Length: 557
Image (cartoon, rainbow, N blue to C red; front, top):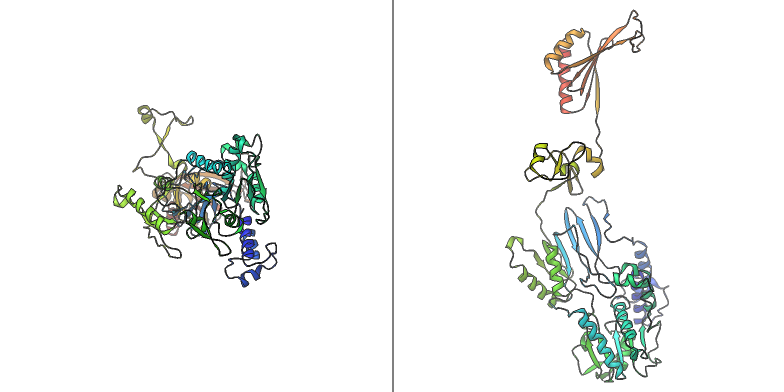
């Protein structure tokens, strides 16, 4: 889709300067000859080559020191539109982009973040400010009724649309309406756009990503294979046979140029004709201008002519209205809000309405609301926040059998007969704290490999110390210094091999004595090597202190 849209921009800019729209070999010359061109064909292709496709809810972790990761959520604006939930530097940002909270004929409504409420920052659109849309049924009835009134009176109805977006929604509505009203089926409906057939191919291909209504219709046939609508890949307005009633969807949607503007200039003077604006109209465009019903308009050639045709506006724009926007913001519970994508006046009204809405909250719980102009930095100051998630076995604590008798819970583990319960505030937690990319978690050593890339390991040390004294003296000192000393005695043959019970005693045989302290964490071996005592220990505070104490004993001899 992005290749289709951005490529069409280059074609339109080439047409604007009078070039050949089919020529793409002058990519660099485009920007040189026209400074208004934002990019060249080569730059567009380089951009497309870098695009990576992701699915909704798929988390992308860039493994940066800032801990940047994000996932996409369905935005409901057009096919494939997405919100992005971003985690960076221990803070969270939800960027809605353009979004719609209303399920229409083919798209699902935008979804709320299920597990990530209360983002630190919400960047949200403000297209309609405090305006409130009529119900969908009312808008559809007005849309189809206005078209029927125009064509039954012998007029021609122009619907300016963009090739991708609301056009597909309106085509579904009108094709269904025509099928239910046989007296209209002799009135042709045209979809005039160079991108029309390519855009519809995209919709036919990805019908499985649409709402349940479309997916159910897919069992009977593709709902975008229209019965009463003809695609016009190219249209010569001067040679277009517009005798009699007809309906024409033509781009662009703002009537600034192209087929829609040419047809408007041709039909505007006839009172039987009509223009139906079905989407958002930007200020200072012809589409916005004619909504105020001026008596005259200026054609593309610069001529002034009367505006006698009917002009009506029915909003099918896939943007939230005030109520939908306010409810979404309230459910998300952001700590800071930045309003974007809206006219300054509408944005200001929305900001005022939101501030009034939040006045009922305590001052320390009200989000900040900003509506910065373009290219103006917004600086937000956050206090340092340290928190850690307790995960795995540590997230539950065992209860004794006595507690089990006092509480009714069916979560007893068959191995121990104990129960697992959620820990309470103030309960001590002992585990390993792991911090990675501004995110901390506390886990049991047994769960370390499950929830982190770390593994539990140990370091063992061995030290050989000269010792020529008797084993009995060493035993006495060790037992005086350490509690619970255990020992084993084994025979060692003269050749250095270990003796078994069946071996006969031979001159030169010796005994190897091993002492164990602190549950085997520290071992002292005497007799294996003549004149040497070997101490082995697991590196730990207890092991290191025990090893040092043993050296003090040995050097005292």
